[in-house]
Figure (cartoon, one colour):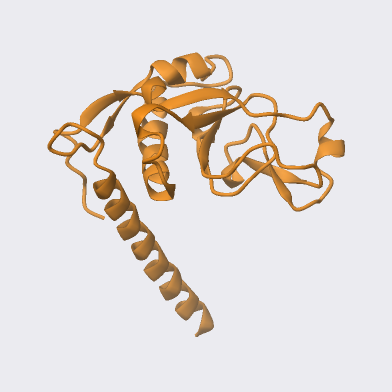
Length: 179
């Protein structure tokens, strides 16, 4: 992909776009919670999209949202496409305000990259916690349309192109492995 020119993007406060609060969590030990069921459990991890295991417990959160851990680094920011079981210290980002209905999978995936980059630059770690208060106050840059509103079509088109390019690369790899 070509480098993106962000010089004319608009600035937005994360807390104006998302209500950030803890996901609902069961008061169970990991062994009790992650009992090899079918429901993903999003934990405080920077790996595997934050999924630490699977549970037979009922899901507590709807998919189609962004999560992050307030106990690890900013690398633990992920888009969750599927319903999941929440976990202590996992924060959910729930779209709000006039743009609440505008966010879909591709725009949220785009936002994850922008948000993670801004957060990583702040140097969060196990001592300097990435709290929901800090996340809400952060300013991020997003592409804007002629009226200064987020450019939803740009984000959609860009992520569609990234997904096509990724699928092409994966198919080439599959082909090479068959030889």
